[in-house]
Length: 52
Image (tube, rainbow, N blue to C red; front, side, top):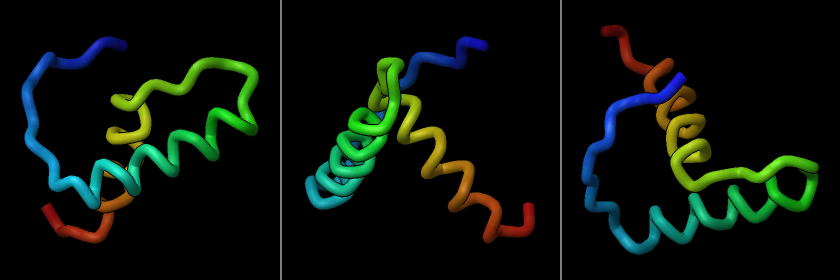
């Protein structure tokens, strides 16, 4: 399922952390792993901590 196309500005240290997660996922996956996919995974896990 495709999501919305938006522009987000991230702190450099957060971008580096997400890129590191992406690199680890790429090493263990036979499929491509997009930056957007990793961002959405991290957001989903983080949002579970909030009661919305």
